[in-house]
Amino acid sequence: MAEKTKASANEREYVIPLREKCRSVVRYKKAPKAIKVIKEFVARHMKVADRDLNNVRLDKYVNEAIWYRGIKHPINKIKVKVVKEGDIVRVYAVDLPSNLHYKQAREQKNSAKQSKIGKAAAEDLDAKKKDKEEAEAPKEAEAPKEADKDKDGVADVVEEKEKAEAVKEVAQKEAKTEAKTVKKTTTPKTAEETKNLEKTYDKTSRGQ
Image (tube, rainbow, N blue to C red):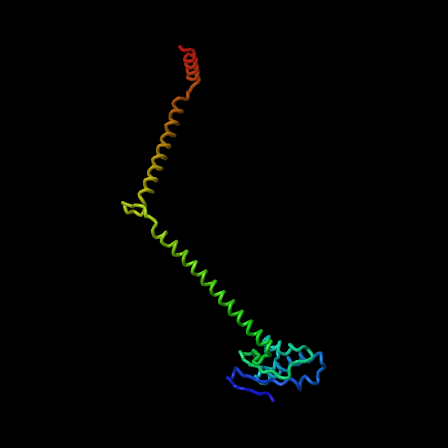
């Protein structure tokens, strides 16, 4: 008979006998048969829907406790802790052999160290980000504002630049219009005027 201790409706402890069920099986199938016996026992006692063995999940240490003496010599009984989470039932080993017990403790210690290291690294990154933000914030706040005496929303320096550009554009336009008028006045309108202009050019070139 299996021993049972009630902790709550969804959490229980059992001592599952394996010898009788595995006795009639050939030697090279005894360990897999022990695994199946554990799942069937848990599915029956925890009232798994349709006694579906796929909803029973064994912890790796339960599996190692069955297999650590080989496929032909599984242990005769095992004490497990069963936790029901909805439709899924998880099985954890309680009393492990000494070698597996030390392995479990070592792995738990390593996982705790890794989690601490990860937390410390995350905290360092957060601290660096905060330092950068604090260093950049005063620069933006202390940026000098350009003077605006008119209070029209545009800085005086910008207004002066715009005025200078506008004056340059007006001067360029006036120069272009003057050049056009000069060309129009200097260009001859008739053939006689062109001849007279040629004569005057010849006299000036001869020094007359």
